[in-house]
Image 1 (spheres, rainbow, N blue to C red):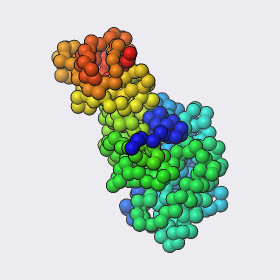
Image 2: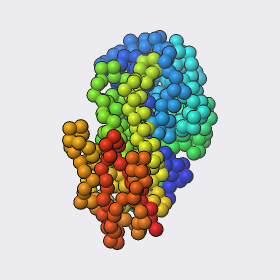
Image 3: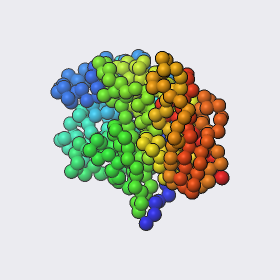
Length: 416
């Protein structure tokens, strides 16, 4: 038994580490989440009227991509068509339920791809497999599947090289024959290097499916380590996550996760080698809500402050206390340390700390360590004291100096 070698496209995808998810469609105008039509029982004939008010007047693809890049995201997965059946791209005659046939009058996916290419961010396309608009989904499923393949062929043919496709909805008909091989053959014909993902949903997190798939999915929560021993193919892992309680824009959803929680979740994903796909839900006009943009920019500040180590470093079997862990990139180990305190006067800091510690202990260290230092500027390049016996390591990690709190602090260790 052995672990298979990843194909180049899969290895490259893993090295991107962090992506932005975007849920945007007609539902965004209602500000009640992406399932509003289904959950609130709105007749499709009534719901379709939202197309007549879809202007995308504040959709600025260049700005959205710039925000993703500032956050440290290496790719963006955008809903080209969600379960409502409305397409942000030109469906080229398949129907008129698309952005070019709305007051918007634009192919928004073309704008998105062009902006990604200009700023060196990989574009990926979310596409629903479940469809509340097309009557063939329940009335003539084989005919619907051909419509789905024709839709995907447009996306694979008309926008140049794309990063991949992210499908969602097969869980709606678990016993049906989705003719997956035929769908994926369309992609491979036009985009041989595309990453193919098919979301298994909340109930089958991390489940491996069709051999053509390149990544498993985890939805919400935290991902678990992948056991690839004896598999026919190496597949990546990716966890998608909302900032609040909705994927699509929720005008009255104030329950945002903190920046600290988002940073810790990004680290938890990389701990097990999974990518982190963090969602935003633009407004009905296409603008990024201010809170969401601020959180993204805060993550980017952390990524840069800790030395951009989240991308190519991989799990290496080093285990530490609690949430602490280490990743390896070549001859370097990176220790991710949680729960450090800010050193300062008890009147101005929460939980007054000191630099005195009994040390953090790790096992499974793959070689002799020459030196350890913090990656952030506040560490000043000062080496940290440590002792090592075989694969066991004890490090005297220092707490944050007053004026700094990175939530998770990263230290770089050089292996001999």
